[in-house]
Amino acid sequence: MVINYNEILNPLTSRFRIKLNYMQKFTPNDLLLYIFKETDPHKSNEIKDAILMDIDVQNEFHHMQTLLHELENAPINDLILPSDGFIDSIVKQCVTVKESVVA
Image (cartoon, rainbow, N blue to C red; front, side):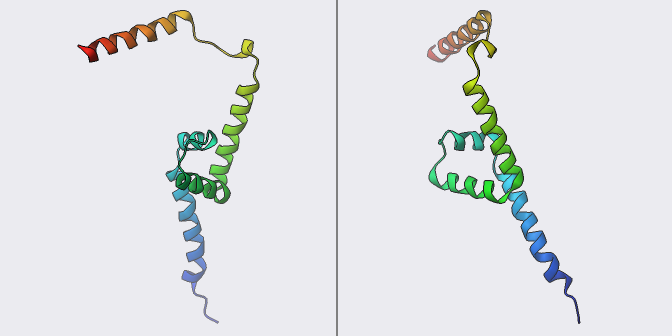
């Protein structure tokens, strides 16, 4: 009996390639957009497939869901809010940018 190693290795390498494609194709931002239902139907279907087929994407997705759930349920006192000075600096920068665009 002759063993054809190409036939044995081909399915393995093709599965590995699929996994790499999923990992490289979707960013954490893509997953967040998916969670908030901000992706188009085609992209949503691709992300669903990636979550089902790739354990790394699945883990990242579940991790994000857990963090968002914790944030949504955290008491306001436990959240770190930006200081008034930080907010003022952002507002000043926005006014400066707006003035430069209008001018």
